[in-house]
Image 1 (cartoon, rainbow, N blue to C red):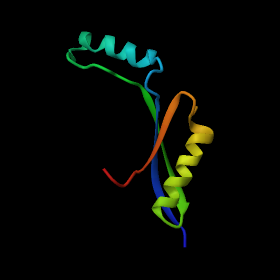
Image 2: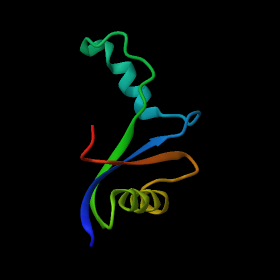
Image 3: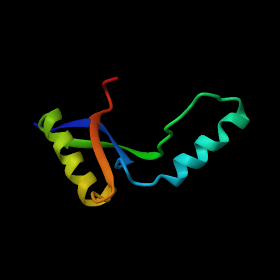
Image 4: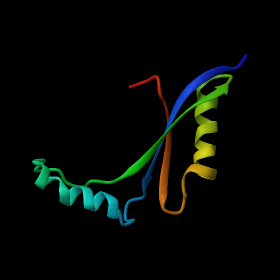
Length: 86
């Protein structure tokens, strides 16, 4: 029997890949009163529900989906996690 599992896929640039969006945010923070924040990296997050027989199957499907559609595996890392856990 399949159950609907809420999943989050986080996509971030790999280490060593330039992140101009993160750098722009980091430069703007002191002007907004946020001092001492460094190494800002931007990314994107996708939330979805997946019908699967168990949570590990849902996460495996989300990982495959992330590699084939949601990310560019050459420059990005994609991580699937349960949306019901902290």
